[in-house]
Amino acid sequence: MKKKQICILGSTGSIGTQALEVIEEHADLYEVYALTANNRVEQLAEQARKFRPAAVVIANEQHYGKLKKLLEDVPEVKVYAGAQALDEIVEAGPIDMVLTAMVGFAGLSPTIHAIKARKAIALANKETLVVAGELICQLAQQYHVPILPVDSEHSAIFQSLVGEDQNPIEKILLTASGGPFRQMSMEQLQTVTKADALRHPTWDMGAKITIDSATMMNKGFEVIEAKWLFGVSASQIQVLVHPQSIVHSAVQFTDGAVKAQLGVPDMRLPIQYAFSFPLRLPLSSERLDLFKTPLEFFEPDLKKFRCLALAFEAIDRGGNMPCIVNAANEIVNRAFLEDRCSFLQMSEVIEQTMNKVAFDKNPTYETYVATDAEARRVASELINL
Image: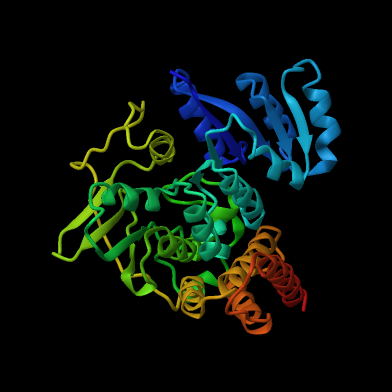
């Protein structure tokens, strides 16, 4: 049987490295066609040596020379650099599936190119749907391209909907760990540090997503993503704080029945399911023991976690507002990691940016690009005031 050829955008990040573990475990079914990274040259070179893809792309063109030198004795691996190379590599004929595991707005353009090239999308870059959900869904429908969610929550919803094609969704129950600050007061949140925020209680993720989890902006983005993936309104999505991260999410149907997907926190499961759907393949992972794990659920505090409330507001306003929120969030997230912004200041800057950047009810792709640039500029100026 022909092996499925997979391109991984963002192969050196948390999702990318775990995807390579899945491919390694099922080397008889999957093969790496292309790997990409932004700055981690040495790690990308190591991956290329191990998996021998047809091509690697380093997005930051300044690292091209170094990557080329590191792989000069592996001539079968072609080396490219830059944003345009990312857009072009996903269009390569042999590719069957593109795993979009890049972080942030940068994932939007190559995802669009992959869809237009009729490649199946395993979506781990939530910003793609946050920024341009309507456009992405239109393109996926136009080019008959499946979008298979990789986020654990959206994969859980997707799994719960298998076999339920004719049954309308009454409500999506989107679970959230609550992050490291779930039980802290507003007073305590005034003094938390990036080291505190990076200590996530259940998931091992990259720094950007871990900070977004601490502010609960990550969950706000997942609400926007769920709206587009599953064709529901924001009012049909309920966020549940579930510290154990065992129930990954659930769907409630019109007869009151609730279907959920449960499992230990292990991102390899949703990655593998996206690769193998509709089949379930063996996975060498820890198994869930419900005798040892209590299951708790709480309502999120929208005053304490203002970012989640701002995400719901962005959904209600529509247009380019989620794009504004995403861009501002990328700026404040980086500023917090660089000690230029406090934890509570992040949501303040995002809210002010929402009020300052031009709103467009019917954005095009060009609008998203312009909006992203303007929102980044405004948020950066607000931080430096």
